[in-house]
Image (tube, rainbow over all chains, first blue to last red; front, side, top):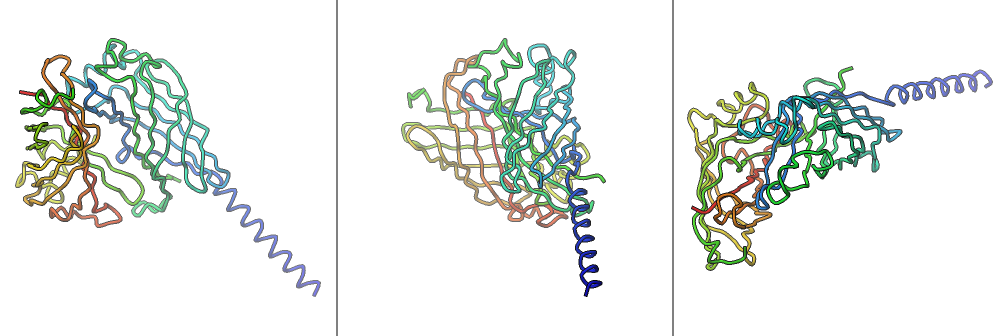
Length: 198
Length: 177
């Protein structure tokens, strides 16, 4: 009986340790942003009657998630010179000192270590957006957060749509253009997919 | 600009400020976003009779995803098959107004050689004098959800790898001619 109890205790301890190890292992997973399936984009009201959308084609970054502890972090770098609107002339204009000034400020970065979860859903990410040489806080609202095994890579993968409305003047962008021509408010839209690369 | 007489007329689609795009669910994980960069067209509005018409022509080969290799795949036989079907076309003679705003546009979408009806919901319809051109100009954000297989765009990946539902969105700007 004593032996049985001892064995049970040993099993329970082993199970406890095992689950502790699993928890410790699963505590934080790092995901690399899939640049082929992610789209950092922005929308701005043009002359008060239409919406213009542009995207950045070159970027890199990683996200860590710890759903059990409801924590996470993100570190993203976007190449300003990769701004893409579908119109070459506009791309070139956006890179000048009138807007992003990519020669002086070649990189946009977003860094966050403040992730908010509701249940197991990531709902917002608060961080610092550095753009045009200015760093300001931005909170991205997160929709459609999903994680599952990637069907081809067989690794954990997550996706989400994130958005935030910022005021471009806070980053000193496009001061030549009054709100009637280009709205002060810019909506950032980031559709993202990321995989754990092991 | 609420004056219906001023609004009524024919508008050219501003090719530089009009963006036809689509969103599709990828692997049940994320939304894939792409756009077409070459578009032209005409819209007529009669704000008194509350009628309108539209013809939008999209160059299927101008599909743009940020990944040139993938653009090539989208243009190929698996998807848009642009050699055979170079143009995507939307024609409508059915505009629905609420007050002086267009809220819905129903028409026929021809894509991949197939013509089917599609109704776009219209958000943010605004007409004001164009700051530079000094003529009435209108803008809107139109969207509709379709099933790509209705147009025979089956592709190599069935759902849930690539969803059948596709959200179409046209960010449109036009100026009176």
